[in-house]
Length: 123
Image (cartoon, rainbow, N blue to C red; front, side):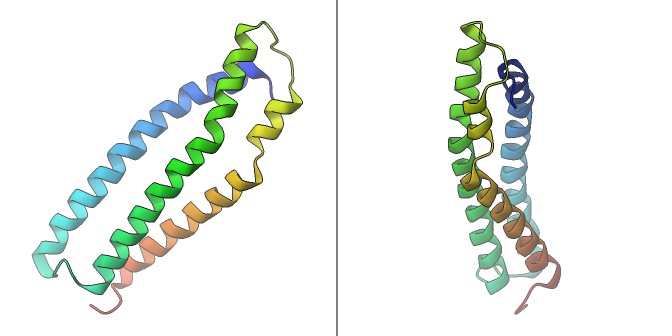
């Protein structure tokens, strides 16, 4: 079972990951478009597909945050109330089936994006 203080610490560490993902996504789109101008046209099918996959990845990532942030807030509230023992409600919030499915979707989108960038279908 999840202990609220552990969950709160996990989310503090995850904040750095959130920043790195945001920087990486911005860098990916800027650098990717810049590279594409060298040899390709921005309207090539594989580049448009990459942008759509990139947008989908960002949208799903944002949705994942909305699923797990209530668990973060609940963990902080439990710690503030001095109730830092294993909590089944918090555990259930962290084991969200929807969250798991969305994580799987981001992995699938990342793989599709890599395949698109490596093989450049239609280029």
